[in-house]
Image (cartoon, rainbow, N blue to C red):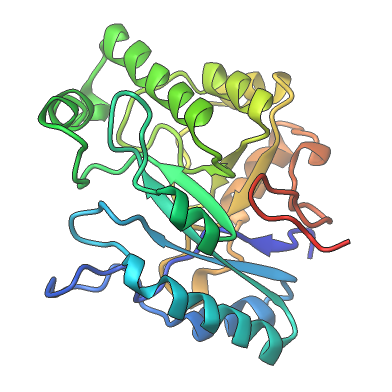
Length: 259
């Protein structure tokens, strides 16, 4: 298999207490077993960040989750990373991860999600309320301001992967890719939520940004599912050298591999 690892997967830990629905179906071990059976060398558990209103992981669980990832790494002889898909919570580029969280997590993903507790009422209005119907919005002003938010996110935080760009928010992905190159942040090609035009993907590739292909699996059977994205990159002749988990293990900002 060309893809070595899946670094965006969800489990039953993406669930706020007392909310009656699970966001994802599998346990950590079920995700690991699926990744192992698919021939992957690594898998990351990246449940939703702490400020998601309905589907989130909890800081109180991080130590337990980390121990489980270490245990399963040994049991199945494959690397199991603990991460989080953090949320943007302000127009100033703040996310719902603090300094102590970084110490417990291997990788930090970040994406825009609608149902998030904002840092302030102003952020709630500008970042979430006005982007509620993002696919219907054609405002160049909103697009420019939203793009500036992502650029601030990359500048202010050590983000390993920006997830599903353009999902529920209008942005300029090429401008964001240019900033990601400076920091070493990866742009995700998400098999489940893919929204780039051909021109945008080609334009991002020309910036020299590095991509990472992920499934965004919400049930174990979808781990390692990349068929949609692979068809696109083959059709557009995107260089495999720019895809960090194609026939090699990726380098991350936060996760330092043992030499």
